Image (cartoon, rainbow, N blue to C red; front, side, top):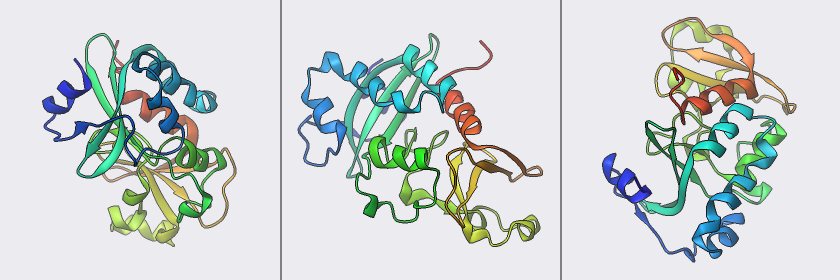
Length: 219
């Protein structure tokens, strides 16, 4: 399967665009200027700074990445990633990086490596169209009270300082408290709409969810 075929299979009316598209930003300008045979290896190199933080996901990524391409989806330029784990195909998209710190509005208190992810790699990365199982695009970031207004929220006030960084595609949300600058290895709130919330280290939790997005874990 190709990216074009995968887009058609999931009903996404996006199209692959020219590699000199004016909306390409940051490292994607130089990557897509290279021969297509080099795109995959150059893209994997971009993820190198995050291998220690996302070891399970990046290991799966190196094994199962099939193809990448720039796509235009409803006027938004993204990078499409096609994976295959030997049985199933998985289509992900990543937004153009934010680049300048000034464009990081609302993300200033994120952990340093996560801010770097948004600034240098992707403004959001996850399953096509739903954005699940990866860091949400800045335009889709929500606070905890935006996704659940139940009685349990009283324990976690002020909720406007609890930012949902990831949605698992179901009842789970990975949440960071951004009332002040976070260190590189923060704890996160794992919020479930159907069971009690709990706390967990942020990066291992993010890594586990992202791994699910490119694999069937009952192998």
